[in-house]
Image (cartoon, rainbow, N blue to C red; front, top):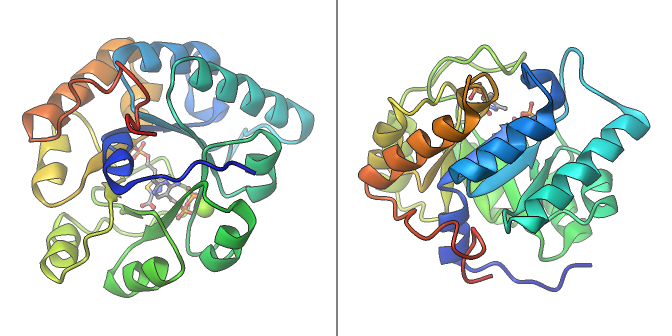
Length: 236
Ligand SMILES: Cc1ncc(COP(=O)(O)OP(=O)(O)O)c(N)n1
Ligand SMILES: Cc1nc(C(=O)O)sc1CCOP(=O)(O)O
Ligand SMILES: [Mg+2]
């Protein structure tokens, strides 16, 4: 079991440029996409092997190991989506679960001090996630997305302003249809960072796409300037 305790500032920093991906999201070798995204300065990575054409069984576990190793070599924290068992098997830095997954309190019990992200579409879900021990919230879909097969309708940015306005201070990352063109609005509305799949996984040049996303977050007030000079969660 990981002994490391995540601090608030390190979580906010890690959330800034949060790339999520599975092999079925990529137009070329997913290891190349991840390597190039890391070169461009992503600050957190989520392994999300899910949906049509996703790997399962041993090939899925093997890909998770390889991606975790690559992230570890570059000090990018590695999160597993949905699958708590897999996260523990590959010694991931954390787990992300949504409202249809294993309950957040139970996941917290199983993963100890690893990072726990929970999806929240509205204020009620946000409050419950916080009570269950979430370290951060994934709020969305903010904009429309083709990537998640069962995505809800886009909420727009007001859900973020509403959460912040009502005193929710927990680290938040926005998700759903986020590009370098709208990332700044997401930060201005109250998120600590942006998470996204297609903006990098479908890019001709994932390194350039990651760099562009970093610059957009930085320009909006997020300080990404030293995200690659140490742990993405720098004070880990
Ligand atoms: C950072 C982040 N936010 C939200 C999600 C979505 O989680 P969930 O609602 O469980 O949907 P799936 O991704 O499991 O299809 C996420 N994965 N990451
Ligand atoms: C995995 C996921 N979760 C969402 C949510 O709203 O909870 S939207 C989404 C897909 C994000 O992909 P893209 O950046 O390609 O829109
Ligand atoms: Mg899920």
